Image (cartoon, rainbow, N blue to C red; front, side, top):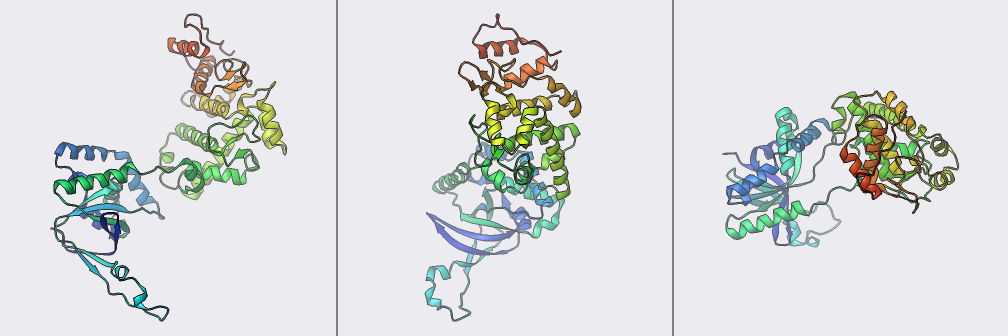
Length: 416
């Protein structure tokens, strides 16, 4: 049996739930709090909850974050309590100056501050924060020193009768089902861990190729209107940087970048990647001399829409065109060095009116993009460069895109 535990806390009421917001050491959390199996009588249903916790990657990610991040922080865990004899001890509140009278404070609020006493016989189980709990346990196995960190815990009473089980299960679902993932907009604007987000902000702030409006920072869509003065949106630019980082990491063959969305890398390493990604993007843009000129010009806002319009219809003046070329280069990482891949893709035509783009991602009759066929265009380019064999599936996809029968479709000619 665990010894008695005393936690500083605040008592509160929300709907029908009486709860206690307390501070708890990570070491005590590891020792005393279990997973949410308690909310089911049926052991098979309890196993379902356990299986959801068997995502070792998430637990490991959280463990790495706790160990490697000095500025680590968690939101509150929600913990159910039953059994034992937990006690609430409100503090006596006194006024230390003459600014106001004790009677100015509501009686209920005076009793909201105190401490929770657990005698060690209680059953404590996580209703929200189960993966965080798993990550905490892993982290403490490797580094017990962080066990003195205090985390915020919301304690709620759980009853083991049918009504109590139903009420707690409803709370479990409400907390976990209603949680909203962090939006891409917030990641790009605020995330100080995600390497792609850090570089996105840095480039649109500091780099002449991107900081004068060439990237529309108010749009987060993967496409942009044809008449827009910007080359792309900040949402697409972020995605493009993620692709670049993925290719750099795969070519290097190490796991350093696998942590770059979960643990902030040291500044010197961030700076190194900033140089590498910028060089990569400059080489990508330089594949089209007209785009390179436009991006560096003071009148880029006039030149970019012209590059999209007739008679030019330039592939890389479109966000989807940039993505196709980026993915094409990345797809060669096993067979070609980066320099060799950039040399090979110079064979790709830069006009949407040419094969393989016409009738695939470019509708020349309606003068519009067909972005849904981007993966097909990529596969056709791989075939034309000799990086992919012709197969029935590729022909069938092209026939479907062109609205013809599979027997009559012809793949575009390979590049010389």
